[in-house]
Amino acid sequence: MPPPLTLTIAVRSVVFQIWVWGLGLFLGLPATPLLLGPRRGALMAVRLWARLVIWGFQAIVGCRVEVRGRPPVGAALIAAKHQGMFDIIPPFQLLNDPCLVMKSELMRVPIFGWFAQKLEMIVVDREAAAKALRAMVAEAGRALADGRQILIFPEGTRKAPGAAPDYKPGVAGLYRELGLPCVPLATNSGCFWPPSGLWVYPGVAVFEFLPPIEAGLKRASFMARLEAEIEAASQRLLSETQPR
Image 1 (cartoon, rainbow, N blue to C red):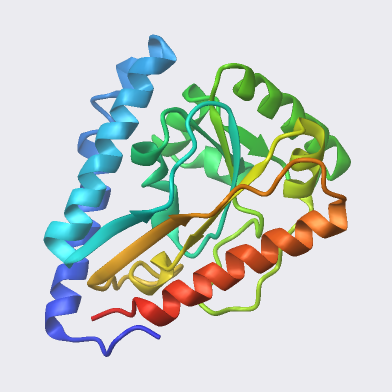
Image 2 (image 1 turned 120 degrees about the vertical axis):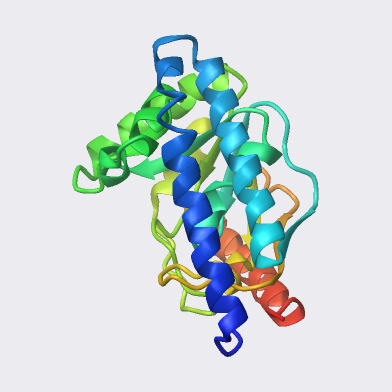
């Protein structure tokens, strides 16, 4: 649970939200000409945006980011806990070329959707079922061929810290078809930047890369192990790193 709301937290939260949305407007709009050039230019702009958001999270809110484990380098499949908006930001600092699996609704967000399209993120139409899975696997294969890291949030949406998990089968389809180990990623980020609401809180947001789950497991075994490992690690982080 977050700490009681204080005047200091409220003021810092408002200033931070202005910082984040201001960056999107005053950095994102001037950077739009990069959308006409090579993908690398757009990636550099998004990396700068991520770095400045993380800086603001620490300098304004008082929440620093701690990374545990070893982020994969080169082609990889990563399955991450998703507790809040912040979860999409550190990957652009921790991974050399992340390829996020995103729901199609996000592509309609101005600036964000434009850059996501330029960066060739994997867009999933959740209404398309089997067809969506085939398209996701095909796009993931192309991204891996370029040495990118596929990042998927198996629950498909943000979950409040401690909420009952709801892992969807899409990650199992990627794991099976790509034939790669899967790196679980745990976090407690939702304690500090909750999945909804205006307020953000000081503390230490941890992103922990767990040992890879070897390729070739049966679907049920893989899903059970993935959920167990991510949830256990995330619960441990929640218990040991509470907001101040």
